[in-house]
Structures are given as structure tokens and as C-alpha cells.
Image 1: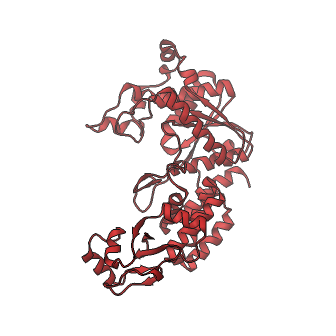
Image 2 (image 1 turned 135 degrees about the vertical axis):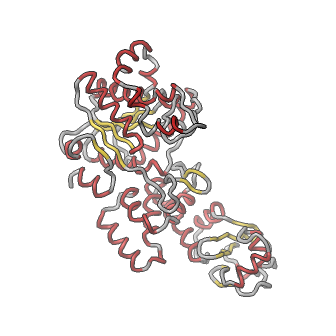
Image 3 (image 1 turned 45 degrees about the horizontal axis):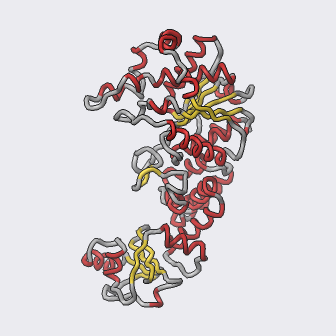
Length: 415
């Protein structure tokens, strides 16, 4: 299958500067680049789609350059932000870059790629020459119309400094520099970067007459909340297990709704289209089993954290979903105690106190109402008696699962 067909099939195509996508993807092998912001030492799930797009390009034989924005990162892209960004120290950029490179190597399947820092050339720029050779190709009239700039100008309590306003010129200059030094002729990125990418294409054409191209993928939006994809109640969902554990990572995907799970299977996994079709057929036959979410969660967790961690996370999640912990293995038990919501309790504690202690109810009165409504279960058994106390047979391996409803659960750990 041609690369253009793969990109379309997965839903990765949003915009391209050529008349046909095939001109960019299916002819001569190109050198493409993606710019990465070094403000954190890990990428988050909202960036995962872009990494998998890159993987499709390099697996098709195209060469890849990753630019770490050591120069532009100190200035900041105004798009999607309501305030000026804090400037980064050199040491922070260097440490973050090393961590990001490690993630790229893993998620790109070990393929070769180059990583460069645009501070290497941006810091050498002579201001007068830059204004003469680059600035003259951009009009303020067009720059203030950009989606990344206009909201900051039109909103009274937001503003944009000249520093951030210059970002698009510097990004365009990056493309020109890579075109000169590495014969790079394709820049890719999310749809929010489209204007900046086109600026580079145009600067190359005007400066040396070379043909360069732009390609963007659609930004993911959580269809349930309408918010930017990749956020949870605790903030961003990171790819680094030190920031978001494998279990928490798995749970993020497992808890996604039905409305977009097929889209996520296509965009966030390496499963074939036929495999995804089969998964969705199983899911449609029994939506309560959450077959699609289970497959999605395992595949993405295995991709990011490895199959062993995905297996453990799946085991723990399945136990919590069913409300039973009798057959859990030692590794799963350790993960369950460490990662899942939990409460330490003693025998003979009342079920009402346990619900409050586990933060499944805010008061005994509310806990009693949940029990009367039939919404509470302990280790898979519905609780109907609000005067019930916890006994040793409720526990297996020193734990019991207390649930309120389908998704609110706490691990009771016997003291």
C-alpha cells in the first residue's frame, strides 16, 4: 500500500501544500522535519499521533530530522496560549532534549534519525542581516491574521510581545537552514502549525527558488469534553512512566468513551485496518465488555511502556472492572496496591465507614443511600445491608475491591 493510502486510511491527512498528496509522499524519498518544544522532559499523549505519522514516513524510506527548539523554545510559539512563556535555561533545554530523544528512538521503532538544536544557528544570527534577508519577506498584515496570533491581539486581557510575534519568522528560518544544510524539503506538524510551516515553504522559494512542501495532521480533540486531547483530571497524560505510571496510562485509554475509540485505534496504534475492523465488530456485539477500549489501552501501553507493563496494567484493570481480586498475580497485586485508588482499613469496620474512608461517599448518610440504591459491591458481591461490617473472608491476598457504580472503585488494603 502506498504511503498516501496509509495516511488517508489512518485519518492522518489534514492539509498538504501540493496539489496532490501523492506528490509529497509517493515519489522521490524526501528529508522531512518536525520541530519539538523542549519545555518538558517528556512528550504527552496528545503528541503521540504525530510520532506515529513520522514512523509511517520513515518506514516508507523517507529521512527524518527532529529539531529541538533550543532557540525558539526560549521564545515560545504564541499559538494556543494566553500568556507569555517563561524563558528556558540552556541546561534545561539540554536535559529535556536528551530525554525526548530517548522517547523518539523507542516510539520510532529504532530507526535512524537526526536530532539537531536550532539554537546552533539562531544564536549566530546577525540581527541586521536577519531583518534584511528574512524579515523583508513577511508582511505584518499577513502575520496578524494567523490563527496563532489573532486571538492574542483581539482579546483585551491578553497580549503578545514582539519576542513571540517573531516566532514564525524563526521557524521559517529553521526550514530554510535545513533545506540548505540537509536538503530537507518537507516540514510536517499538527494543523495548528500550518501557517508557520507555509511561511517556511514560501521563504525557501523566495530565497533560493527550491521547491519545498508542507504536510499537517488534524489535532485530536476529546469528543466527550471538547477539550484538547491528552488531559485528565490530574493534568497531562505523559509518556514517561515517572510522570504517568503505566497503570494510569492504561486507565486513560481504557476509560475513553465509545464515540471515538475506532478513531483512536486507527491513529494511536500500529494495528492493521482489518484487525481494527474485527475489534470493532466484537465491541458492537457486546459494548459492555469494552473490547475496543481494552484493545486500545493494551496496544498503546505496549507501544509506550512495553508488553510486560501492558500485561500487568491489563490484569489490574480487568480485576477492577470485574470487582474481583482472587486470582491476581504477585506483580499485578503490587501494581494494584501502588497505583489504584486505595484505603487502608481494619477488620470489623462498618461498610459505611469504609465507603467514606475510600472516598466513594462523602458521608455515612450518602454511603447508606448508595447501598439502598444497590450501587455498592464488595469483591463482586452487591451489598444490601448498611449495618454490615468487614470480615476476613471479604479479603483475598489482604485486599478487597469496593465499588460504587461501574467505574468508581477503591482497593481496600487490610491493615
